[in-house]
Length: 230
Image (cartoon, rainbow, N blue to C red; front, top):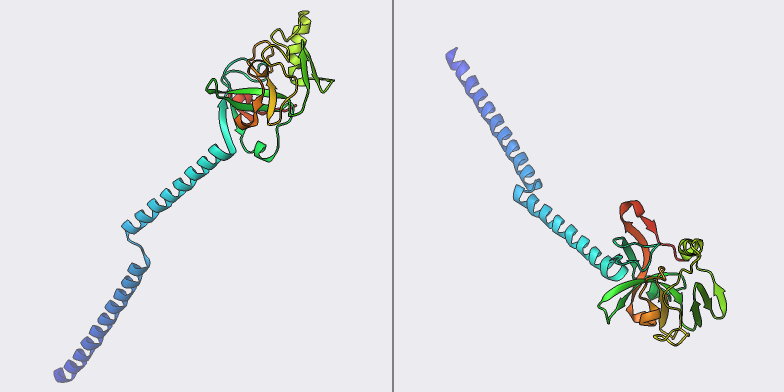
């Protein structure tokens, strides 16, 4: 009986060994497959760093394009545009619009003043070819009296006191004697005609010095608004 059982036991051990080897090989193959399909920790980190660098580079490029070619921030400094703009307000300036078309009367501009090394914000009063006369509170363009709705609050306040609003300079004057706006320039006044250094003193504004049109007041937050160009 012992001799008959021994071959059977050996056969069972051989079968068991074969099953163990097959399972081991299968597990090894699965492990290799997993290892090949899964990147190492270092590879994942490098990929994430690359994606971050790429995203930051794209963001920086967009900022440069927007800042230097499309829009620019501007901070109002001084009382020359009151009561429509006040010192400390921050404005978004559209730099693209005047590459497409010329400025129009009533639009609010930001422009360079090379002699003073700074930028001004004023309103367009006359465009090339316009013949302009400004006397007291009366504005005439090409011989016709023009209303200035953006001055209504200031004009009404002055009238209530029995005064005229414009107590500064008329146009033309001793400093700027021509009444006709030359080609390639605009005539621009501040909304605060009592306290504004504008075309009545510095002359016509060259198109080459115009930064763009003031489009949005974005600071302070409570005063966020689109600029009215009347």
